[in-house]
Image (cartoon, helix red, strand yellow):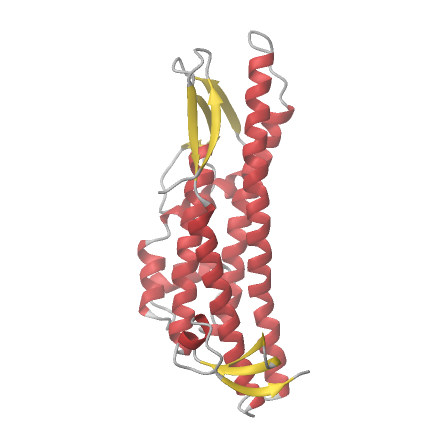
Length: 294
């Protein structure tokens, strides 16, 4: 993974240890793609409504369902803030350990770290819950509302969803199962504990530990959990966005990238709705002007 940012820590020997923080470039590109796909798909439904293929009543339901997309992007912004706060608190925790070396370490910053870790996992969980609600609208209104229940029934072959989506659920969601297990224990059983220490080489280790009392993920047989918090924050960030990218591309494929959408654009002609395919949209082509608003 290319990385341009680091959490820099100097050990007792004056050596510098750089913890890689994944470059936002890849994540930013993925987020931009997600927004383009969402904008295009909503534009396709808007065109169908303007063309009389969707009634006013049904189009209001479409708008209601796209509010889950708005929620996803809001949670993504929260996710970015949480990640920045997390690394800031890591530095505060290290400063506490250095200042109070040989004495009882104040727990406030360490507890804030664990609280942020939980909030970080909860936000990922909630993003996937929003995905499940959008799936109800996009794939099958008879599906379970909960993301984990949807996945379970997809694996059992009870839902007619695209084969690419089935493959993601069956083969590429181990990282989410781990999140579900950790937060299930934190929310419903024990909050767990932390272990923050410095190795002989001067490397800081942030561990989260808990007993597994949850049966919500029976496919994961663990009696005790030990997590590398720094690694989780980086890996889960990337896993989430790569998964969202694949899911959104399935949404695009289902509606058809050759479909036409009405997209609101501001050009030299003014503020207008333009009729565009997805290729034309991402290529920033003008397309056919359908309606002028100024």
